[in-house]
Length: 234
Image (cartoon, rainbow, N blue to C red; front, side, top):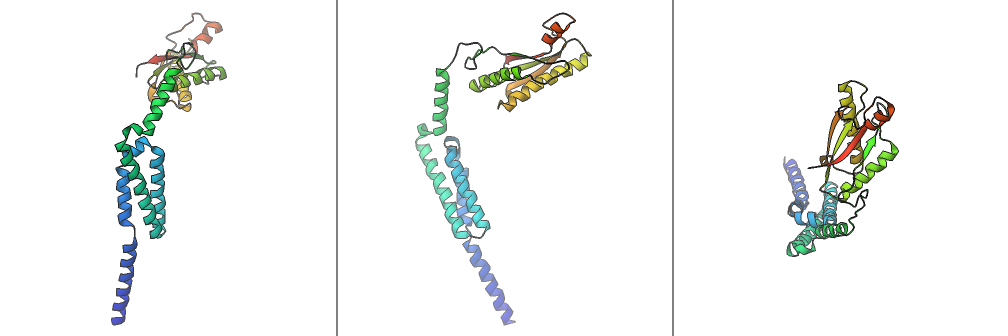
């Protein structure tokens, strides 16, 4: 009986020693420091990312039961994020992200163009794109026009656009409304692939209801199979 009692005591002691060696406190302090470091995350995201990498490496070491290394890494993560948080709180004018933003805005203001087709012109002339019969596939030439729209929207971050889809007179009213919407949506998808937020783009379809050319011939129909890009209020 005594032998089992001593065995139990030995196992319990081993467990207590192992638990005492875990970096529980260091992990908690590092987690709290990261939560409190919003100023670093906003002002210096690269430094914040480095601190987060140290924290993740510490977690990996802890999972591998390399507690000494885990403690060291948790402490390093805590120290880095605390030091930079204190620095940016004391020196808000040194915020790197804000300085980069201000520099970009200044650079942008310096290169405004008066060319109506330039993406550096806040009043750039927006294009009309055309489609083949019963199609919503963009043509290469029109794709280039839309890349210019994406550059313009990237250059002026507050602008928004409305995309109107149209069809020629052939086909039923419902079908042409659907086709016009697919055309508008295809333009939207193209802009999204160029990095434009869908929240800055509105789509609608007029189907065959707003032709720009009258006549029942290919010359008129080809002008009516289109999607128009216009400025919109956000």
